[in-house]
Image (cartoon, rainbow, N blue to C red):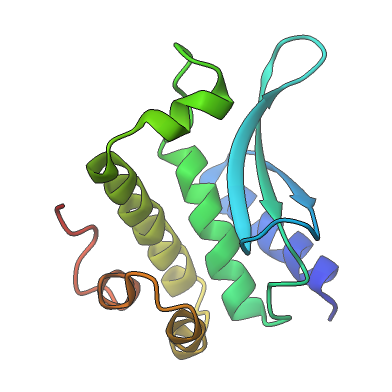
Length: 151
C-alpha cells in the first residue's frame, strides 16, 4: 500500500470515528509531518484542513494514523476556531501553556483513536523516539497512563 492509499484509508476511519469531514492535502515542502489549519472557501465558509508531508511521513500505517489523528484532534477539539483574529495570526499569540495544553489534547485524541483501532503503539513510540520533542509526556499519553498532563 502506498502513502496516498494509507492516508485515504485512515481519513475514512477518522471520518467514521468523529463524524466530521476534514480535508487532507499533501505538501512536500512542509517542514513537519503534519499541520492543521482553517481556510475560507470562495463563499467565506471555514474549511478544516490537515496538511501532511509524505516525504517526511514514513510509509507505515501506524505512524500515519497517529500523525493524522493528532491533527484531526486539533479540529475536533476546536483548537483552531479563534475568529477574533485571522487564522494565520491567532496561533502565534497563544501562551506556551495554551499551546502545550492543545498539543496534549490532540495527542490524547490520537492515542484514543489508535488504541481503539488496534494500531501498533510500539511502532508509534519508535517514531516518537526518533523525534524526541516532549518524549516522556507524549509516551505517557500514547500508552494511556495519562490523558493530558497539566502544564
